Length: 335
Image (tube, rainbow, N blue to C red; front, side, top):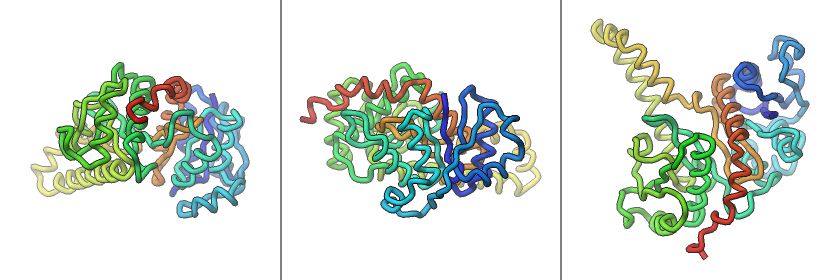
């Protein structure tokens, strides 16, 4: 197994990308390829490749900026590290691609170069979220802003397959994010999607609300990319606010300091479970290859975990399982 990592993508590239990739060598049996400008990657390594079995460097002189126009990237940046990791998946030189770079360009490259799995109209971003008994999936987290009901059905089915075969949840419970549990609640999109989801072969539990995202009721939360991304960013912001407030309040008095000391292990666990770095990256489901979109602010820890997301997706044969499911990705009710 070979995972291609975009060494030049992200706010802290290439140093943090290289550090995270090297640290991941000790956590997985996969071979890793750092793709980018050789001189910069070598400078960040601080050691010879001979001392790092399982790691190699692939030259790609071009760099895609975080704000670069997607159309420009598709037309003129074929020598970039971002384009190269996708191309390595397309040619079979790598089993998966990981990047913390320009997410719009990454998704566009994956869509155009790899193509979509037959029966999938829209690839979607599947993000892992913490829950009481492990992780759950939020899909779509931003790839598709404007959706039709059938798209939400496909997201639900892809998310269910991901949860079952990669997260090892035997029968994932799938919920549609809305403003109330009743089928009549929500906008035209969610109401129509609800009717379709009742007719496909997944464990659809109905509508779920925002407070269900981190509860014990659901394993796969389905939304269009606009709502899903807003929900994700709000959750990330609230988690960071809670951490900052706990740190501030714990230093206001001697008793607060004593209480914080007594609860230090619990507070550390909360911080770890709410930190996006521990979940690494999001899978772009529906394309003909495994692509992991990592946060632009990813540090070494986040990159290492993103690589592990890619490894688990390869081991779970997620693309092949989505291919097998293609006859059911378009329910008869949608025709």
